[in-house]
Amino acid sequence: MRPFPMSTRNWLSVGLLIPVGLVLGCASSDAPVRPPLPPSKSDLVLLVSTTLCQHKADFLNKHLSATQAPKTWGSGEEWIISEDRSASHSHESYFFDEDGLLVGALFTFPRGLDMGPYPVLRDTLSRLKPSLEFYLNVAQLETKTSMESSSLLETGDEKSTTQYLVIGLRDRPILLQASFTIDPYVRLFSPYRREFLDRLRHSAEGGGGQTMESQGTEDKEPFPSLQQFARGQTAQLAYCGEKNYDIALDAYKRAIASGFTNKVWLAEARHKLGVAFLIKGQVEQAKAELLQSLALRPNVPEVLNNLGTVQVKLGDKVAGLMSFERAIVLRPNYALARYNLAETSEATNPKRALSEYETYVAIVEGIPEEADRIVHAKERIKVLKQ
Image 1 (tube, rainbow, N blue to C red):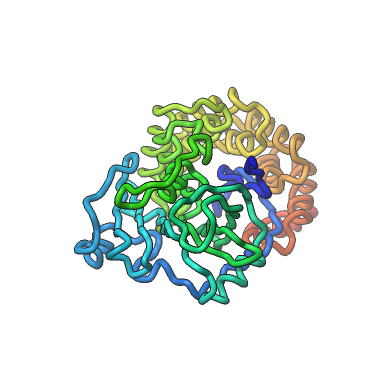
Image 2: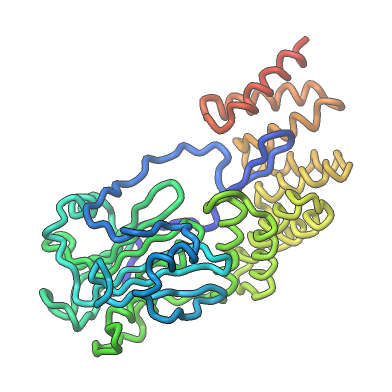
């Protein structure tokens, strides 16, 4: 039975806003209706003495005596606590990026963990819709046959994702793996990755289990590129503390240098690099990256909006207005582009500015994140109507 996706997560859909003046667009809708978070309660606590974004030095202060020598994980490291030394009685892996931040953790139960004693987690899992269902061959299971129907379930909060790989979901759920990660790295921590499934088929001591070579996903893009893109997102969007545009610049440059085979990835990496250059005040470099992004994907409203911001900063208001207008043609309800168009039009076309401010307010009214701009827009509407 081939795996079939039940839902998808857009890993490129993280955005960036500038609170004053012209507004930079994000790669998702600028006025989203936020869905409620999925059920996530659990009485099985796996991240007992650490948290995502913890610094490696702090982690090792608590766990050094229990860990094995680290393994290379791209430009970062994987630190392992073997099953016999693990408080969770699992094979624990902790993944740190090159900046020393804990960005993901994986807990593997090669013999399976019966969910019977964990009614809260069982209830949570029963409420989640599997993102993937497939048959898995795990020879070490103590309570099930080796070939079992498996379900991958996803939950989390505003900044992190938890994934559970479970067999017997509707009968007697057995947990095989659980992963925890901050959202930029979610693609790299799916338990359905081939290297993670292999950990179920081979014990930490290198034991048996048949191998199904075709099972599990493998990255079509170079791992270093994906890892550096995630590192850039983490720094640019403050997933682990404050924003750090120096790290973001370094990460996006290295992601691009490593290469992407898919032009969507490359275009978004250049888009994000352009935004980082703009925030750092390197406006010409920002323009160059945004133009390269648009050469790869010509009709992305967010990139056009950001290019318009750059063009205005460089003194070319006519080009900026054209970019904002093009973004709105592509997405009529693009509130941020309308706000930018209104602000840039005030001196030369106050009637157009008034119309755009009014449209902006109508689109975003009631959205807390837009409160400051709504106040400003309403003030400008009063002035322009006089």
